[in-house]
Each structure stands twice: as structure tokens, then as C-alpha cells.
Amino acid sequence: MTTYRSSETSISDRATIDAKFFQGLADPTRMAILELLLTGERNVTEIVDALGGSQSRISNHLACLRTCGFVTTHRKGLFIYYQVSDPRVPALVRLGQTLARDNEEGLRTCLRLQSAPEDPTAHVAEVSVQPSVNVTLADANK
Image (tube, rainbow, N blue to C red):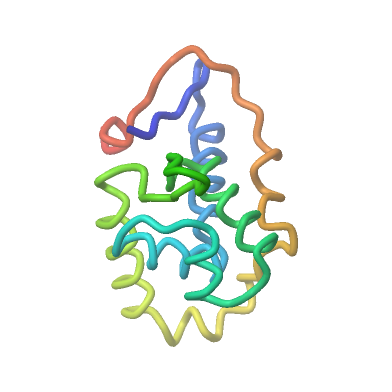
């Protein structure tokens, strides 16, 4: 379960954390990786073969997805396999895809949305939150 940890979380702090969470999805390669992993676990070589690109680039994107809590890993022999970390992730991805398609024209023409950063993990180190209170995704609706 994904939790946000903070002490005396303000609306601004929570919004910053939430934005960072969604930045984990704000890259076409990460979305393609996640879409592939929705069909089952894969190792880096299988992901590279399916999507193309260099292994180091795919590995960096996988590290970002793992840090943000979208995927987990486990070892099988010599290989590390990646899988979706939480049963709610597929629903989140599908909802996002549906909303994106419903708003595709506006998204294509929006000048305010910029391309993702060159470094696929650049957004990960930008937020520092002190652990103390757990807030689950279910609590976000309250």
C-alpha cells in the first residue's frame, strides 16, 4: 500500500507529494513500461526487447517507477523481475488513460505542459518529507 509520510502535513505539502507521485507517470517511456508490466512481470532484457532503447535508460526509468512505488522487484536466478507493486495501480493507469483520451485535444495543444525531464529520476530527489504520520490513498478522499 502506498502511504505518504509527513509531520503535520499541510495542503501544500500534500499537493507537492501528490504531484511528485504523478510525475512518476509523466514520461512516455515510464508509461510504456508500466503498461507492459500490467500484463505480467518482466526482467530488464525483456522490457528492452519489447520497447527498444538502451538498457541503462530503461533501468533508470524502472528505478524511478520503483522509487515512486509503482513497481517492485524480486530475483529469479540471475535476473531481477519487475512487477506492478499494488493491485490499485492498474485501475489508476486505466483511469488516467481514459481521462487522457477524453481530453486528448486539449492535452495535445496545451503549451503549459512541458516534456518530462531528461533525467528519468530527476523528480525523485526533489522532495524531502519527514516520516511520522501515515496517510493512505484512501485517506486522500476525506
